[in-house]
Length: 389
Ligand SMILES: Nc1ncnc2c1ncn2[C@@H]1O[C@H](COP(=O)(O)OP(=O)(O)O)[C@@H](O)[C@H]1O
Ligand SMILES: CSC[C@H]1O[C@H](OP(=O)(O)O)[C@H](O)[C@@H]1O
Image 1 (cartoon, rainbow, N blue to C red):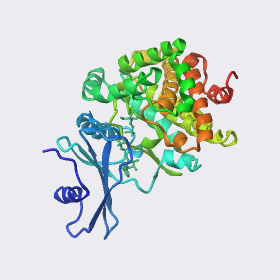
Image 2: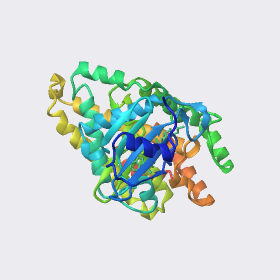
Image 3: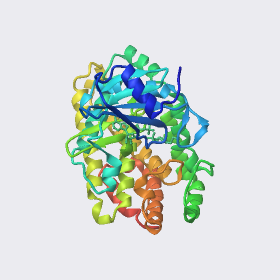
Image 4: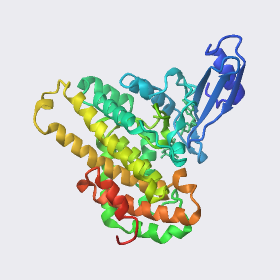
């Protein structure tokens, strides 16, 4: 029977599952700070061994019981972590156990690392972050695509990772609600004029509709589905991607776009002179993605893999998509339901300035996406710093 765990019965469960030695002295803390789930950290005080038990609630934690949400997301999450581990084990936590009924995933404790969003807010650079995320995205994308796996097997995976309820959240919160006067939106009253201008911008909305359609229809590769900097643990040497409960088969540029957007939001929270590490991360992620994907491509059995320019077309489409998706993510994290600490923790005047900049940048990323090489993103940030510039 499903029931939400407490710190006490999370410990009892760990003992019942034999996850610790019999003489273990266990302590437990619920450390979840995300929008959706419970996360318990259980430590054996004698040895310092530890595990994480993540449990889905039958509703979205950030809103409460009025927003019911499928428990199946826990199964999607553990299956996605296991699938990613078969291609890039170095970039995901080990999964020790999962249970569909209890909606739990028991996994490696990564507390020795730091959530990348928090570290970036503190000014850390995480020098390997882009290299690792570029490789993570390229390998998981290629090996789950029709170019990297048997077409029959891929169709089974598409079924396994059909994730309608979680996709609906993204369809609404990323691609729809922020572009309309919807009651899920949340923003400072001082931004109302800027937001109303955005709601009346039919050129922007037409392009956002195209991006939403791509998200709804293009079953290209297995995506993480929510690859923001709060879903990444990092240190100077290591990177681990967590929280793939939004995983599904979608357009290749989506994960890259979410990642770029969250780096950009951090850049906007900083003084201009301190933004360079974020632009370097964006350009390097793209560079590593292209190089890694190209190497994988050369091993493909697909006859078209040896036809000139097929790879170039896939890669250039991926960049156009990624930039457009990044624009949607920048806008929704500024005025939609789920914000980012990078901007929300700024004092009011700086926050308003950064959020206005984010809205202008998000718009231009979306409408100019077909004409922006990766190094032009930095220029676009500079060009959108002020109105009419
Ligand atoms: N494997 C892990 N090791 C250590 N801490 C973790 C781990 N997984 C999650 N956490 C902690 O729990 C928080 C919320 O986890 P997350 O998976 O993002 O939950 P949600 O799905 O609710 O967003 C993370 O920000 C992190 O602090
Ligand atoms: C009501 S869900 C809002 C938002 O939360 C998810 O992020 P996370 O689980 O990492 O906190 C996802 O980005 C959703 O769009």
